[in-house]
Length: 225
Image (cartoon, rainbow, N blue to C red; front, side, top):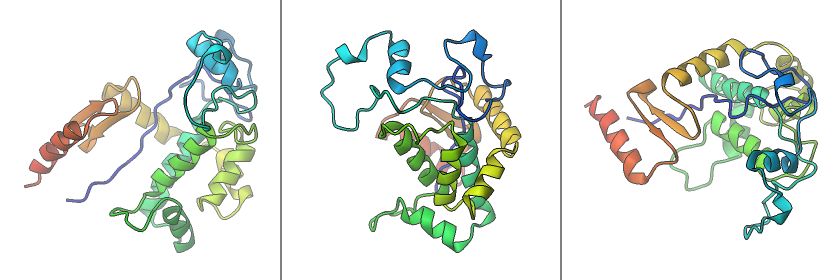
């Protein structure tokens, strides 16, 4: 029995605006009901100060150099397009990507001693996380299609930046994400991380311990013995 990791969408903050597209009203709040302005995502500093109702400059943080929540440049925008790209990565992997794209995605995350190669979804998520959490660059804005189209091309999901942008400007993946969000609601997902085993036979809310995961895996494997 070989485990397979599938990444599903969950909208953490449905109030956020996007730089270059209008988030779907079916899953995002009316911007007029929020503290933000359409087309102008807040900086990390502005967003997290409002989220935690504290002046981040006054908080002493004893962490590493990758702490960028105080950034005046990097943006916190709607992540709908990012979820679409993660969904697409899963579809491309299932359909059988070209050897060039597949190799690029696997090489980006796999080390020599990896027992299991990283999936296309995992590598896509890794790049999205890096863009959001470790940069102070306003150009690496996940709600800006100029950036996400370049990223999608670099990951091998599209043959060109232009092709990627054309796809992002379509409604491809929208209905699939909507359905996945309905399933998430049915499974009781209210925060992340949230792990669902075998499409709902068991679940774990939170990061979980080694023992908790092994217990779930043992129960799942028992069904196939």
